[in-house]
Length: 219
Image (tube, rainbow, N blue to C red; front, side):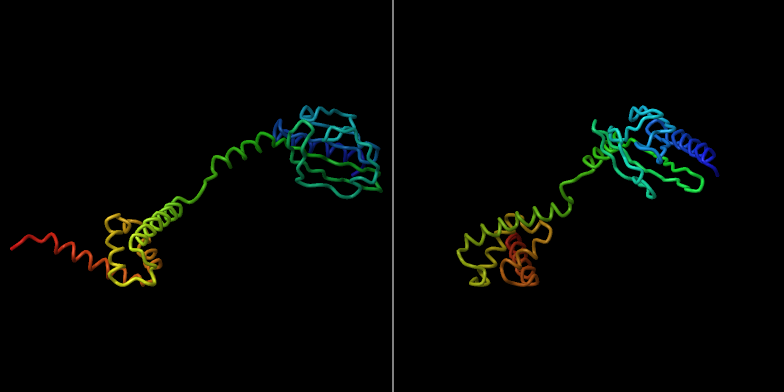
């Protein structure tokens, strides 16, 4: 394909892409063989206020690029922040043939400013401060620790120095404060009182039996 054929092809491709992706998509064809890389064709140029013949780049600067820039390599899916605060996804594809004497580039710039704002808003709306189940468990553990601390203080002994009667007294107080309604309460109490969970369940069973016998009617 000769120079004119390639240029016609790239113009057609650029227009097709712009039509397909709509008014937020700017496409253009550059002459990369000339200083400033002047625009040979542009579609939806209102996005960057450029027109055919312009050497202004997407950043809003007048390009004074040498012929070596974009010599062989293009750029795909790059982010561009413009001077007026907009955000684009930008790609540049190079078409070069020294024998046919052409060096063109097709540029695609998609304005994602509004999309980025919506994405940020959705991320903020979807954000949470924690997983509810874990938060409830953590809060419950804190409450049990506070209740245990109060009960141990009333007994006046460190757990390792306590006798069974001391621990039973603590279990009774915990019962009255409904501490065993919390999830994992038995495991927490067992660890704090330096006994096994089996022992805590045993103490609880003894206290339940005491409670049952205390409410039996006289015969």
